[in-house]
Amino acid sequence: MTTDTTGTAARDDESRPGGPADSPFVRACRRRPVPHTPVWFMRQAGRSLPEYREIRANVAMLESCRRPDLVTEITLQPVRRHSVDAAILFSDIVVPVAAAGVDLDIVPGTGPVVAEPVRTAADVERIRPIGRDDVDYVDEAVRLLVKELGDTPLIGFAGAPFTLASYLVEGGPSRTHAKTKALMHGEPELWHTLADRLAEVTLAFLRVQIEAGVSAVQLFDSWAGALSEADYRRFVLPHSTKVLTGLADTGVPRIHFGVGTAELLGAMGEAGADVVGVDWRTPLDVATRRIGPDRAVQGNLDPTLLLAPWPVVENEVRRILEQGRAAPGHVFNLGHGVLPETDPEVLTRVVALVHELSARPVDRG
Ligand SMILES: Cc1c2[nH]c(c1CCC(=O)O)Cc1[nH]c(c(CCC(=O)O)c1C)Cc1[nH]c(c(CCC(=O)O)c1C)Cc1[nH]c(c(C)c1CCC(=O)O)C2
Image 1 (cartoon, helix red, strand yellow):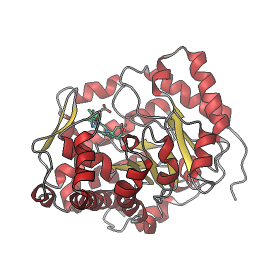
Image 2 (cartoon, rainbow, N blue to C red):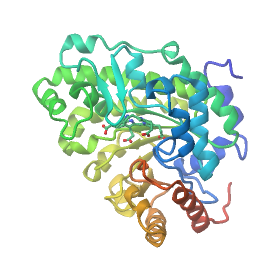
Image 3 (cartoon, rainbow, N blue to C red):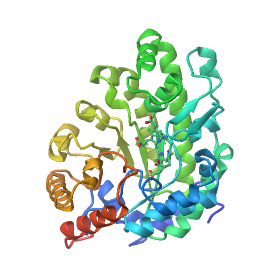
């Protein structure tokens, strides 16, 4: 089975009752009845866990992403600790871009930094297409993890074309995305060439993960909320749609996430995902009205509130579960990633509380 290159055999096996494809997480993504609302946390691997800090003490971030043994261990840590309903592969959105030949590093305390920002047609030309061999360490890590995880589903992920393009054009993290927007509007043709190339890289990267056996994928367009709806529809939606609809044949659920996207939720829902991620600014019932009745939602506890006293957290979890009932499927999550200063015990308590409050008998037919 581990030598299969289509992933079909792996998933046939998984679709057995109780297997990852029948897990509460995958069932909620597909808007099927669930025994309890599934919960996982964006950036659950790494960040707040002491066992993560220990393992990463002398290993650079990009190097750790290229070592299947470390990826496997770090991915499993939050599953062991919190009993979350899904694991997310430990990696970073810039990993496939580096594999495509872009000279970049992940600088501690800053994030991705690109040696020569992409600003010209020649720069775009240098971004190569990628295949399995360029990211063989990801293929290997996913296969190891699928075995280790048993019935717990593994989520694969990638950065969406806009968010990736922002790092490449700006040269690093940016608050305004000014150079990226200037390129979009000033040289729309070059922008579309760049975004299309990144869509190809992302699509290939997600296909490698799906063929290796992940049970779902999430497309992170973390910074899309910086755009107006008109700009999003004109410059970004076609490229994210290419990625998401390009995976439709795999049958694997697709999650589409961004931050500050209240005005974009309708458009993001049109890109072809099964689930739309919602940040804490938009209540899930309101989000569901914007997205429509044929998509599940994921979210949306404000990650900063995990630092508040427990009764505050408990009230928020109750409110979110209540508002999530308006959606045809709800995956509980934060509205964005876990903050590094979060007490891991609070995450464990949130998982238990979500499970307890949402437990219900279901007809699994
Ligand atoms: C700091 C940073 C990195 N990479 C990035 C940043 C942000 C910089 C900015 O503000 O613009 C870029 C990035 N990486 C990831 C995203 C999308 C998710 C998001 O918005 O948080 C984004 C926008 C996914 C990720 N990046 C990472 C994961 C895997 C961990 C997980 O989800 O549990 C994902 C999905 C891991 C990562 N990535 C990085 C580190 C140091 C780590 C390990 C520990 C940590 O989380 O801080 C480097």
